[in-house]
Image (cartoon, rainbow, N blue to C red; front, side, top):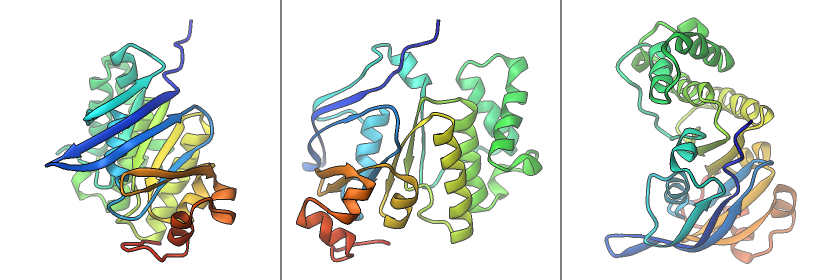
Length: 243
């Protein structure tokens, strides 16, 4: 019998503060299976913190965050997160993926084959034996995605995965993200790049100063923003705006 979905993920009046300052303020939303969800907002809006809360790296100061699946081990195993600057282990590209599979409890005799398949999926089979830390920034990000791909996550959180990459590397990463989506993985991605949100997203959450001000389909968010704040952000009229 297949495992039941860990989605939806429900956040109810979630608050997160640090050093006496509220970073996320009263966020209530539901992340369901299906279309890709983009979390957009200016730098400092709280996107990265919200992603870390959903992934489980941070604990809310108050409010509740609950997955449909009640078993914490199952939730951890069936979601993954890729960061803007991924950490590369001091070993080969292949060994980086094998290590992720080992942590996930995959049988030793299955790890290398699964790791090589994941490298194939992201176009890195040719550099499997190269040290991960000498790869280009785009290759390292694809390697981080390969580590996630090997685990076949139900949910993949992506925190500004192309923010420091050139246009060519960005296109390569976006191609891999689309492959995850096509394979049935739920994509939840933070970005301040509106062009990217249009290309990759179906559903948009607009975050400003730690609050969700708007949630809508990509089409309606860009054509008929429901709030003046979102309209200003789309036009590039807010501080720290990135395109």
